[in-house]
Image (cartoon, rainbow, N blue to C red; front, side, top):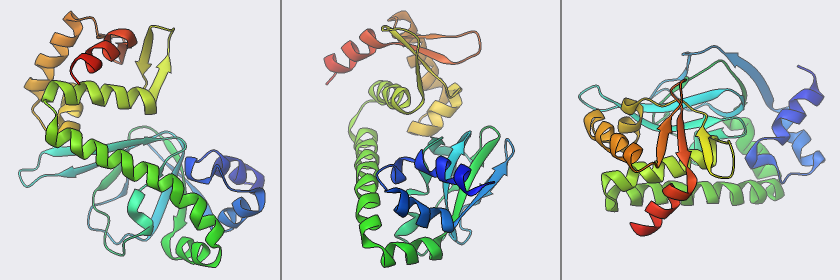
Length: 233
């Protein structure tokens, strides 16, 4: 890939958007691009955390397996996002597994090179850490939702979050969640059973909060979702 193409891709990554052209050039110097086909593991839990990754295109799922072997989905990442978020702060192993949901182009940077760049250029560090701070706030809110919210509210909040990160506007009333999630996926994200999710999804369909497209993607009625979230606050 030509340097200008890599620079263009990096400029679309959320954490790099506030950088100047000169600062972005420093990132280009230590970056590599790799293609991962669908259902390819990028790294496995407990492997040495030697790289951080940025999604140029495609989607990546982060997940763990609990002691019983059940999958617990941590997050999905799409174009413009970085993972793992804490890769620049810790020296231990990867805390979860990463696998491509679809064929994906990823930009990889060795952790050592990234850390050295940030130490040599504190102005770049400050800009990037401001963005990371917002991501940490979002993760904290998700944890609070899991602890303090009922299951139905957690599912609705998940839908709201998915619309923010993976939503496609249909019109002023409806938006489509571009990432196709099964009921088991939703259960794995919020830590409940498939049966519980199925009951809630059926209930939300009756309330006309969501419908399901022919391709299996969820379509959300925005006014009804917002009204229900506001009423249950």
